[in-house]
Structures are given as C-alpha cells and as structure tokens.
Image: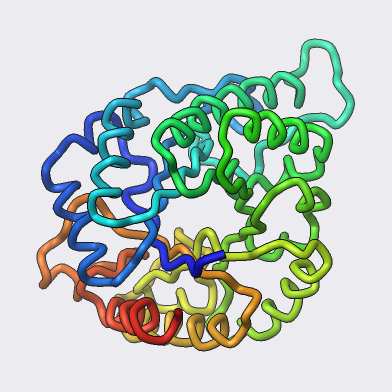
Length: 311
C-alpha cells in the first residue's frame, strides 16, 4: 500500500460551493504548498437528531452530485488521489458519535434497523460515484462510536458497498476506539481519527499497533489535526475550545505527531484536517484559531514530512 499523504478538503461543503472558481484555486494551492498527494472529500448526510432514522443528502447543506463529480475530476487533473468519505451529521449540532437507539426494537420507538436502512442507502449512493469516477478509496463513515457495537449491520453495509465499489474500503473510527471495533476483518484498510495529545503519541500508537497486528490490515489516520488555539495541543479533539491564538502550539503538535508516526512502519499515512475551499488573506493566518494550517508555521512542518521525510 502506498503512503497516504492526504488532506481533507472543504468538509461538509454546502450545495453550490464546489462550482466556485475559488474552490479549484484553493485545491491547487493546497497541493502546491503542502506536497499532499491525496484529497479526501466529505459530502454530508443530514439527520435531524441523534435519534432520527432519516438521512438527507439532497438538501442545501450537501454539494450536488454534479459539482462533486466535477471536483473529483479536477482533483485528478492535478495528480491527486481522491478518497470519498460520506459522513452523517446531526442538524441539531450533536456529534454523530452519539447517534444511538435501543438494542432491542420497541414498537413506536426509532430503531437501528430503520437507521441502518437509511445509512446504507446514503453510503451506496456515494459508493456508486466512487466506482464510476475511480476514486482510490471509499471510507464508509466517520466516528460513529455508539453504532460500532452493531457488528452485524456494519458487516452487511460493508458487504453491500463492496458489491458496487471495487477499490479499497475503510472505516474511520474515532480516537481511543481502535481496539473496540470487532469487525475490522471485513474492511481492507483500518483507519481512525488521530486527535491525540502532543505528548501522548507513543502511548497511543503502542495501543493501536496491537490492533493492527491482530487483524493484519494496513492502517492510516483518516483524520488528524490540531487547532491554532492555546491548549489545543493537549486536547486536539476539542473543536469547541476557546483561547488565544497559539500558532506555535499547533506547529509543535504537528512536529510531535509526525515524529511519532513516521517511526512506525505499519502506519501507511495520514489525512490532515483540514483545508478550506476559500483561502484567507495571509495576515489572517496570525489571527485564525481553527484547524486550518494555510500560511501558518504548521504548514511548513507538513510540507517537510510530506515531501522529504515520509516516503
């Protein structure tokens, strides 16, 4: 498996956004400045609450199929590999990891069977696009922690995806959850979200390595990142963290992350979170608190490892 040097681009972009010229410019700049060879696109499926059983990917909150396909084609003209990761979000703002239902079906209550029926339809729609446009990987979801105990349903879903998409299939579990997924044998590649504290990478990689050795599958971080907010390098998963701008803290986090992961030959790459579809002016980088790293000190670290230190 080739090393994955990827970036998530403009995640959960709304309808009409991918057709803007600035988005193509941003994608081109991303490749040029970072040396990334892979882009991950994340069309959103929307359900109203964590207990809803309907998933909508035709609303204004999700890019249309036509504009998604056009951006995939454009990314390939740039020489980028394209991974497709359709991901469900809750309209009320609750994190998707908390989507949950009773384990035993109860009349008049929402059910896992109803939800997985909708989720499978959502995933199959994009799996067909991934097959048609020869995307290099399909990732069947992201950080669906409470659902992961539903082994039978996940196995059925992945089997269905593989019937229409013939490239490698993965699933992106959440940080600290790698050892809790019991069905890694049915995916081609194991992946997780690497939002670990800057000083705790070695401990977490020791734990993850046991999982990877057990299942004998390739592994990569389908997400990894840190905000340029003070304190984020200790809790990089907390996107609601408030504080002062800390560009150096973000840089240190990336340096620590790359130093740790590049020493492990079983790690086959990482996809960084994230790069926006609209490039801010250079001076705004000094004020930006978010995960983006465009024109921040962390960007130079990323380019160094993507182009020189990680082959």
